[in-house]
Image (cartoon, rainbow, N blue to C red):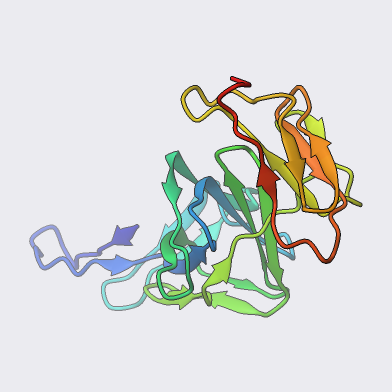
Length: 212
């Protein structure tokens, strides 16, 4: 959002100035991963969206006074964006925000294409000023899976996953999975979960050609 003020109707010298500032997030994950939305909100209920009053003068900086009550901003990524796989290749995302002081930091919620939610918070004070960029250090997107494809995950299990048909994307039930010491099968939703042995070296899956 930019505004300009002239001294008269004959003054055609328009000096546009930014009203808002920018928050830059950089996200990555250690393997190929696609996300569909990112939500940012202040930890002290700061107002970020809704009606606003903008005042400006010819030479001074514009000022915005938030009149609404929206406390979060969501970036809709449509069909999804695939993240970079390292800190060096992290994918940047830009949020345009009104000037605001996040006195108790912010919370970032990332939702992937399977509707799994990753939450990242910081209590560090962050200030968004007009016409400036406030970057956040690159961070990895991590998830705490409480449910996968309709199956509730027992948090005591440390080895969980979903097996699907590579051609159709449909879940496959009854697939044997082992950590090398213990054994289980995928359920009707194609989900496996187990408490794996700390000495496990690999996860094995039997050939699927006779199961499909």
